[in-house]
Image (cartoon, rainbow, N blue to C red; front, top):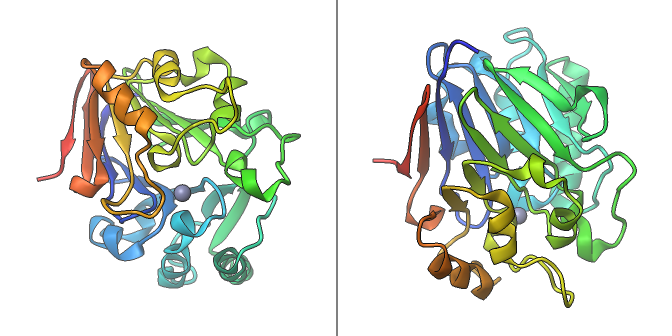
Length: 271
Ligand SMILES: [Zn+2]
């Protein structure tokens, strides 16, 4: 890992998720979820620079920009774009239309689908001179309860030589409780499920315990200011008061940039 310069941008897309990771020397990029293609379009000068797309799960607030992206790729202009996804499909209206767009893109030969499971050989992905590690879900753990579909969400750790970012998707407390604690330690935590309460059941893991496990220096929460879900949760607001040495940043205040330059890192709102 020589090119230790990265810019990670978590976009203000209202209630939803869109993250772009760029290797600065060569502009090779990765996307984790895509709610809004227009937000990121100005940041990708050439679609050939986009090397991988991770879709954490099939909910609208994470995928609604994907049709636009796929329709922007012209045949034979780039190598097949790998899309890592939990292929066990959740049915909803947006997911059905994205699934159709993905099928068309597969037929055109512009993408390839890669099943993303934490217990498969390809769960460590070397790309952009860094590593993407799929740490959830294992193959056997597909959740059929529609109330808990968020627990099918892919959880990704992005590792550079000196720095780790944990992308929690929309995974809930049950996921974090059975996760290997060593795997989830990270410098930056992209907080799961837009800052929602982690556990509904009595005795489940809460925000404060979760932050003790992850030990982040920064926590990033993607949610809109006046959302209908009461995000961020009271438990997260309490944890923010409790952990004075952790910096909390919210996308409703603007795009958030993580600037990694070897051992030096700055995290803050984009100017
Ligand atoms: Zn979501």
